[in-house]
Image 1 (cartoon, helix red, strand yellow):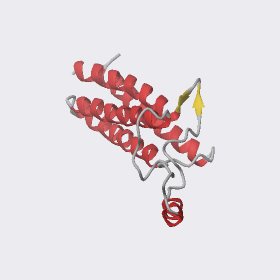
Image 2: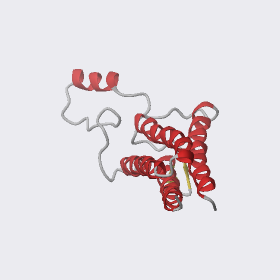
Image 3: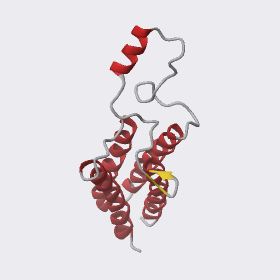
Length: 150
């Protein structure tokens, strides 16, 4: 594949993942949590970098970085979903033992509508965050191949 084709594939992959996320949200009715939104930003950046990389081959390294960032967020998010580690307190549920009624009511009223530690959808036991991480790691490889062809 040519450098331009690899760049188009990598940027197009980010566009496809972003469109898929919007489809799940708007057509499938799955509202995104805070970390789901965080994963979208690097994909949008990678798409813009794809245009830049057509004229500046070194920009492909930036595309690899953007894909790596969204993959890292996806891994972190998948770990939060699996309870391997805690996520942001504004995005997950906390322990309720020992809370007063007022504290519990405050926690409920301030809780986000969509929690980051709930798996809204999965395929083959892998959540959307996990799929984003896996596919984004593949996009990192495509960006690196494009950068090396420059």
